[in-house]
Structures are given as structure tokens and as C-alpha cells.
Image (cartoon, rainbow, N blue to C red; front, top):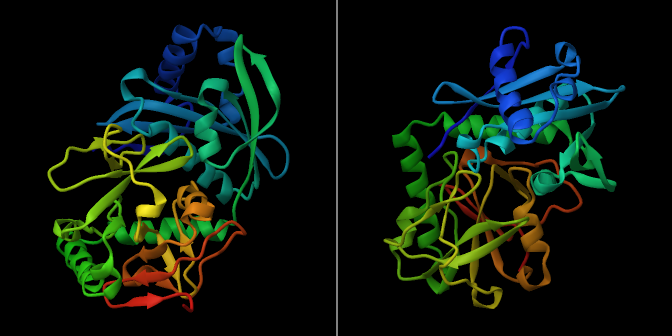
Length: 331
């Protein structure tokens, strides 16, 4: 699986790498003039570089406009590194950096063809399309979530990824044991699950049980669920997550008994801290999905008293850790 490394860099020290990427993407591919591309603002901006196999393949810069407002721009990824989620990783790193600087309003001028990426990250289009450097753009803005949410997400993902492989597997198998010994699991015929990402609890022990298993595929801002059984081939999605092929049969909500929901952390009330893209909140808020039993799956250290909540966050029915399966709601 592709792994990228994002670094904050000093412009003068990495000038050649930054310029090479932007020249290839903006000037050679898109025909932007050097005068517009190199606008004299780089020296006072904050720059990010994305590396793969030690080579710089993507870049972005951040400029502070007025107090509390920042602009992310010059997002570029070389052709050979595209469709691997590197642009998204650059944006996530930029958003986290801006949050630490206590700027709470972010603006971008997004090329029209890629505005879907920004929408997935919570940006909203402001006004109509316009031309910039001869290319169709849209202005988009995002109000940053609570810094506490961002800090918690970073903390728990780091803790999870610091687990040794034997410890991760032992904890994952304990979670699987909790699930498979429950009446929820034994009575269910069709279960929606996930493939472990960034050392989420690994549920593969469960997949050999005689159930109908469904797994998500990202399609725009939605999750589409497909049938999968051990032995079926998998694709790698745009975020680097394994997913069924688009040709696999789909599963409709009325067929589903349980959804095993991945999370960064969950709290005692059943609220979930996810990755911030809102896929599961959008899914579970849809009327056709609201009455399906949901089980948040986390390690014990990520089962906490309370996670920061937004008005759109959806409460889960159960939380499962390696030591307990707990009802969050009264049934």
C-alpha cells in the first residue's frame, strides 16, 4: 500500500523541489505563466512537501490573509503519484497546521474539476465559477472544527499506530471474540464491516464465519456497499483503503442486520470520533439506514468518557472493545 510522508519545509531550502513540481503541474500541464505561478508570495508562505520513496511528489502552501483566516493554495501532485490520496494527505496536513496557528476560517480557490476533494474535506462553495490563469475555479471556504477534536484524532491514531504488530493482533482477536460470542453476531445474516486502515482493529478473523459480508467503496461523498467473501479480489481506493471492485454485487439497506463501524475513538454515550470526512455520519443519518444496528469498534484506550461532538454526529447503538460489548442506547 502506498505510504506518503508530509513535511513542513523552508522555502529557500526546498526551493528546487517545490518549483520543479509546480512547473511541471501548473506551467507544463496547465499552461499557467511563470509570472502568475511564481507571484512573489512564496517567501512569506508556509510550504508543505509530500514525499514518496524519499522523492518529493507533491506540494502546497499556506498564506495568512487577515487575522483568523488562512488560504491554502498551489496544491500540486506529480502525475505518477496521483490517485493515491496524496493530495488529500497534503490538505489534511495543511488544515491541521492552520488549526494549530489558531486560524479558524480557511479559503481555497479550487480548480473546478477537483472541487469534490475539497467538499469531502468540509469546504463549501461560495459564489459562482470564475476564471483564474485561464482555468475555471470556484471559491470555497471551511470553518475549522474544534481544535480539541483534531488533537484527539491525532493522539489516538498515533497511539494505535505505535502498537507492535503482535499487540495489535492480540487486541484485534479479543475484539473479534467479543463480537462473535454475542447474540447480535450469531443472529445476524448480513453484516457490513471494514478493512483495517492505520491499525484499526483487524476483524479478518470474523470473515470466515458463514455470513453475508459487505464492505464499503467510496463513491463521491457516499459509501456504496458491496458483497465480499474471503478469496475475492480487492482494489485499493483513493485513500489507500482496500475496497471491493465496483463490479461486485451491491447490498441494499433492507438486507443489513449490523454495521461494524470503524472509529478513531468512541465515548460512553456512543458518539464516535472519525477521520473528519463525514462518510459514516452522512450514511447513518439517511432514513433508510437509521434503524440498522450499529457497533463502533475501538481498542480500550480509545473508549473514553466523552468525545467532542458536532450537531451532525450520529450516536451508535453499541461499542465493542477487547474487553466489553456495551449498549450505548436503551432498547
